[in-house]
Length: 143
Image (cartoon, rainbow, N blue to C red; front, side):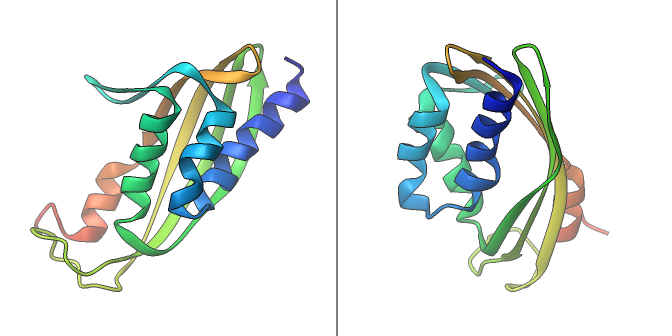
């Protein structure tokens, strides 16, 4: 797949899917990820196929109000691999148990993606978010 097509495919993922209405995420993911794609969110927490990948994004986005995800650097293409750096911004929604941050508290954290493409779609995904920074902003780590 040519580099410019991989960059376009990535931009369908981020910022497009991440900023989409939650109800449309599964359909968008089906155009971006192969049916047998695997997302490695955390050690031992793999998600298979576009529907599961979209569900993970939807779950994370729905925890916040006013979500905006921006592409900061990239995407950088090297053969079948695509990498990029992004920033997630939002405001804490009411109803989080065990999270001291008040509803409406703004949060901002950065991350990077690495994806592998084959056959015109992404087949593997490794996200790396600064979760420690996010948890600190939420007050979830204590003082």
